[in-house]
Image (tube, rainbow, N blue to C red; front, side, top):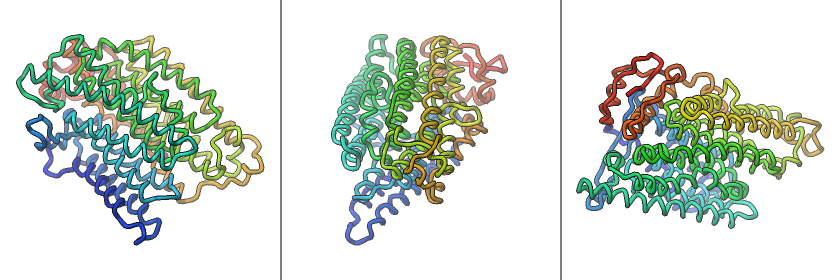
Length: 541
């Protein structure tokens, strides 16, 4: 774990939090209506600059936590401000920094902009805190804090049934989180009974000895919160109502950022704290993952509302993250981490483009739209690029992550990988069919007059489209930073569970780690291991 004299990670949380407070208390009557929106965009861009600075100073090839800082907060209770970032969380932080200004600019609201911007910035602070926290209590506080702004964004700026959708979302996620809180407290007291030290820090808690039953029960308590937030099938029933009634900006941030907090929690906390339980229940989670992939894809085929279609598509895409994670294979976990980032980018682009279609045509119904590419060819092209990335077409970012997930799953759990391939095929069906109905064919009277993207809208969505292509063509810089942390995590799981890593094609899919880097990883995790004897393996025990 390396520290930093400059508080990069603290500022990632403080900047949007103070920005939210500033927007909320700034008198509305003293400035023009657009001022609060501009102030919010400025704060979110400043947060993005800080996230990019973190990316720049982050050292590639290092497996442990970087830019870490610890400060006493409630020493008697074992709670401290402990933050750090590694390859697993790095690009989630950068993605979060990017999507918030894109959402504020691309999905503007017409009323009460001050409150809207204040809630969005508070959500950003909570999301950033969740991705950098290493203390379980602070992680829980940030994890739960996201519920408050999301509830008010849905209920205040949503559509016809926004009240019902907001309450359903809040109850589902709050109930799941209650189980996690019990699990956090139980784990800390078990650790104290063994060491005499009460702490909620992730690193020492990783060395807590748990019986098989204790591990499975605590895993279920933590995963109850993560499965609802992601969502993972069958904990997804809040998804269609919430996303159909949410304002576009909220939908972008919920699918693009908040959903990743659930799968990130599984990787960061479940695999680190309960490795034996993860091995034990892996077949169950793999089964739920492939059900979610196929179910989400099949239900998306039947949707008439394009916004709900994207929500069910996201359920299928998050299934790939779960599949790669519980393959517990270096390729699969790396693909799952990359899939979180890639899906956040592509889903944000799709939701924003669909929001612009709604702004022009005032309908979400696919049957009411046709032939839009005749009058809006640039919009059609942007939608097609994001759509093809979601399908997993080679050369775009979605292909890289899905390929790694399937490769890792085939290596460790072949038959689950075979079933998951069907989800890729079905995704092509519903996305291409949707594009055909909405953008192709003879346009109707209203479709023929639909305006194309303006230069301002083009500039907003352009960074997402560029990333879709760049990360699909040249993913090596991203993988170079993700892979060491994933390898260390898998080594930790295999060491605790006394499982040898399966032989495979890790080196052919991911950059191989040098022996010196491996030695540093092993020493940092207190695991006895040695460099691979085969050039095709990046990690071995």
